[in-house]
Length: 289
Image 1: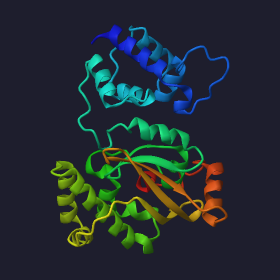
Image 2: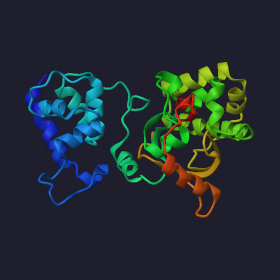
Image 3: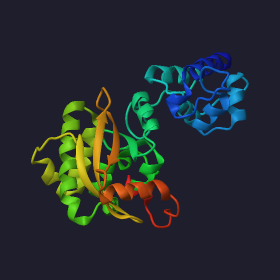
């Protein structure tokens, strides 16, 4: 492990990120062009002292989890993130997608600016990579699981609790949309073992999925109108929009409602109550992702 090189790399990456890139204010007293050390530490969920020691080249070897958090905080691209792992003598992340993936910097930058509407970054298999607090309040936080179960599509057809996000009468439509979207993703990815394995397992475990898959209906979900069953606000009608990454493997997903509608009023109320007192009401918050 090359501690001096790692320290220098962190310093140069920190200097490159502007405060407004990550939603921080730029005041007149700021003496550095980029982020302060304590700001990077806060964004990465680390102590300021620990991060300072990293930049001074005197810290113990950072874990893969710490490196991943730093890569997100510093908005590193794929090659930059890999270089960070090389400098720390850590193995590279196994995949470029999945729940262990990093949200792509462009989508993450946009997510940081969407602080008045629920929004999150997901993979094309509906694994949540990042979300703002309003999204957590509206649809819950992602479950602490790995593998296929990290995908909402997988949970939708294998775990009845996952369907609590939507009113029961809307479930058939959501099933059709999920399967048509997965058909398009499977075609786009080609011979991808993760998608092929998911399809095989879902065909085996869910008669509903198998029947819908055999219709061969195809359609990427670019926008949608849906009703979300919220534990405090009741049924919230929202419009759902998607912005795709260049490679199509990640999506910025955000929720809006037309001005003057009940849905708009509910989203406004959501911005006030946030996630307060919702833990007990939302017994399985990960199943609302």
